[in-house]
Image 1: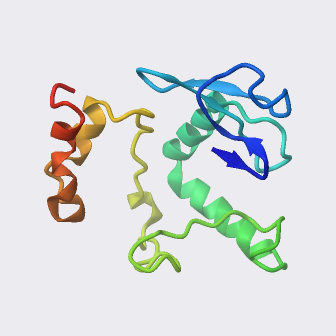
Image 2 (image 1 turned 90 degrees about the vertical axis):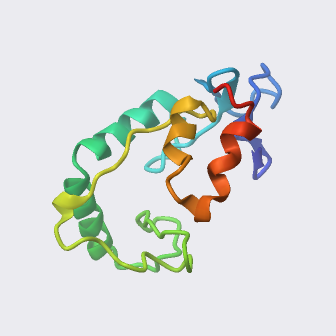
Length: 149
């Protein structure tokens, strides 16, 4: 995948971009993936392992992270589409406009699940199959991916 002329995700091919981007290779299970990520705070290269570490910090204290994010948003006086606007989470269903139900009244009720594999492995298939996602449409993925996973 290329964003603004810079390769951001794909197979790890050395110097495929002429050295323009710093790449990190993430283990995707059966195949590795080359990632070129920028840290949102300063546009420096962001290693995949550091992204996962940050996600684990959020998982450890989702209530505190939500409260910090709310504070950053409340303190921001600019337009929300400005480059320096704080990152906001807007759920993509059903409207894409924002979280329809909002946050729970007690933020201690928020649980962030573990980060899953980059590939559709057995653990991912177990998490999807029989859970009612999309009225069961995704239940056939195990068979699609070979059934043995």
